[in-house]
Image (cartoon, rainbow over all chains, first blue to last red; front, top):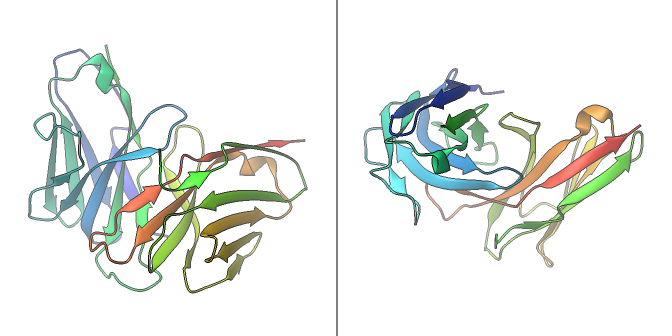
Length: 119
Length: 113
């Protein structure tokens, strides 16, 4: 199946610093990538949708200046948590939607997630 | 709460069948997915079904869809310890051009020897 990678898999940072998380589709082009946040024992919360070459669309309640998303190419999207605080500690997961869309086979492929701990 | 609802926990003995249930929102057409998440990992797509189908079988997995009741189930035959994980059902509306998914809260499946 399609492969999506995330880097880093785990990061610990000090409060006030910024952290960048990369999401790459390794064997397909992704027109759309999604960023999710998952709290312990909870479902995935969609943070934003990013399309290659355009501004990301953020879900209600998600601060766009806090969580900067860049979708620079069809295989790479980045999420930067700016001025991170302990409450930003979470599991961040990206997913990618294949370029050849439409039909029953279209779906999202998920990355392995990035565990962020802000001290 | 979520529009997609799931039972939160299921305990099953190794070798038995597991059935995970999900109800989804009203929509004229939708894709429905089952994902598996193991501890500390991302989501793995298990299977999917389109809303004009009643059933789909893929090896040990059987998906049943009751469109009238908007009820979706995933049956795992001969459940193994490696099937212990959280299972999410998700809905995608075809009218959403970006293909956003709406997830349920996830069902924790624990397989006991």
